[in-house]
Length: 157
Image (tube, rainbow, N blue to C red; front, top):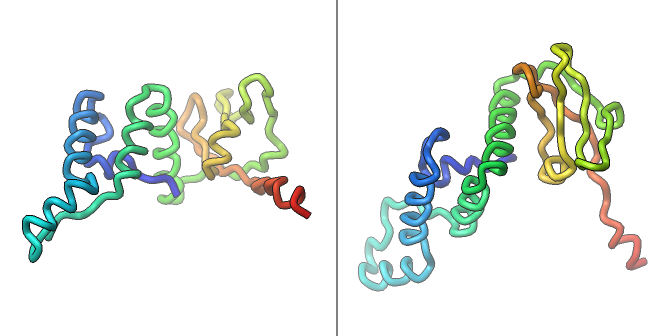
């Protein structure tokens, strides 16, 4: 399942890059392991009571995704698809084998009834994304595929 980076950083989805960066830096200071040890040493009985600890890796991962406009746009699209999927608003199911593959872009496409396209990249598939929003309208499809096995297991035998 896709992590909600906006929730991790405690910012709204329409937050500016400046707001996201400020919150990222604030959370780094709060959740850094060295800072946690200092707080526990200073107040051994209540330490970080009431503070929900967020793994530092999640904070960094959220920042890395949301700081780049292209990554953020892709993430927002995937997050929207996941939320709509959770609400049962998937319009259709498509088998990956029935989609056209473009080697240059590394993405699969399938036409939508509105003459838009459903587009999913190999990177998205590797991340486990299985729902796609049409490039033109708001229809969503679920992509069915089987993850490829790593060849490393075969090489060791």
